[in-house]
Figure 1: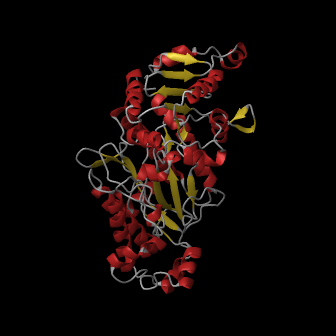
Figure 2 (figure 1 turned 120 degrees about the horizontal axis):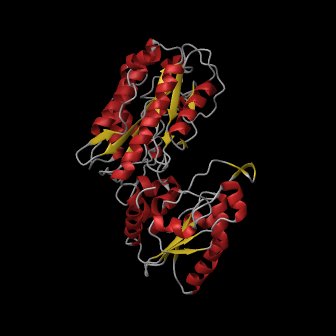
Figure 3 (figure 1 turned 90 degrees about the horizontal axis):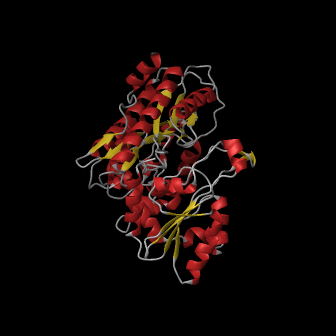
Length: 463
């Protein structure tokens, strides 16, 4: 937990961004795996953590915009709780740690909200993403489950995004820690990978590092020799010489700040020439994007610059053809990179996406594209100091997508479909780094950068 003053200031700043009414924060509850008492590892709601800092279940809070009153709702433990959990601090003591003066039992939240509604007050809430909180919200406000996201307060959402997306020095320090844990996870996988292993073995090693140094992996680890499937969470295959292994993984610190790295390694320790050629194209796109990141530039423009590097590299390899700018304008490169260059990151690995991607990555000036590939860019607006973003270009050979484009003649003037037949078993390559936008430019998070060239990767694996 940060100091009390950090949370007090965050709540004060948020209250200044909403005109009137009650801001309602619902924390998360525990969820059972296969019965009520056998629960998943608890993860608090990130916005609740950001403004109230308490990392435990069954809490709620309100901020009264007009009066400035802040109330924390939660229950003190019972003797039964103490038997199983040991003595716990009182709610009033927890509240004092975050600068909240008023505490009420959880059962009084409903009457508090009902009184505010009877007085004609606006009740602002954020879009719920867990069923427990959807039910809670329905009981409090009577909002139908299917309408809760669309009826969430836009002013509340925009206020939260404007604060959470710019990281302060305390948050940056936590994210540097998360990056160092993520680096250790990938470094270990590179060192341990060898033919004959099952993918799951590497996943277990990486998860162990994340938990031994932090809270958990920042998302379910993506590790697969079928790298053409962008988010492949199956780990049953045996590492086989000649195949590529895409590893996309990061860590969450004990304060829940995230990292997110991707590297692609040869399962047998050595790249083929074909793999080297494509890897070098992706690496060049990754390096260019990193060199461009600075305040005042839109991330859409960085994405498109990386796309031009990818397209030109594929033209040089004979997989694409024609004018590179025309090809990118037509979206032809998206056959090979159907995703965006990156996303914001912080308390969530895809930061604040529970609030809505367009609120986080776009604004009144920067609107989301509709073109295939470009429409998947999660972060397109102008970069500012304190933004943390991922830089993750990739190149994938997806047989079903290639066949679809070929049969429909999509961008046929830019794609050499006949040569692509030799790449149907290639898989994919993705390279991802975490970048902090500074006052004058940018820097990588963490103490080191993971190997980013074929020679460096092979050298690391040989050790």
